[in-house]
Image (cartoon, rainbow, N blue to C red; front, side):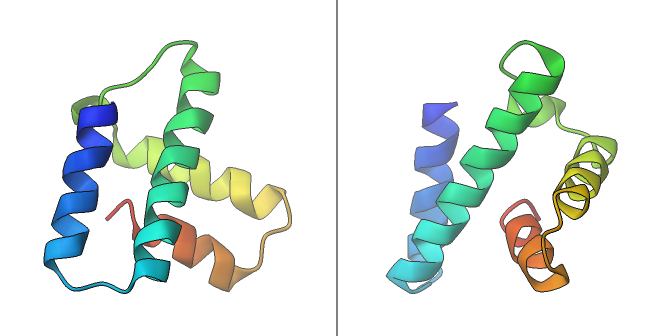
Length: 79
């Protein structure tokens, strides 16, 4: 997973995203995988993530009372 996050960070840096955007995307992606690991009970490789997993994470964020803008931002890094 760490290699995935490192590669993802390198990709974002190559796209000239601001440092704040990079930090937010890293945190959001790491939080998603932490949440998914808690649901599944094991680390989930990125290639095993399904659209259903992302939808369930969205539902979780909404149930927590997150604003639509926050939910959208947290999902942006997963696209």
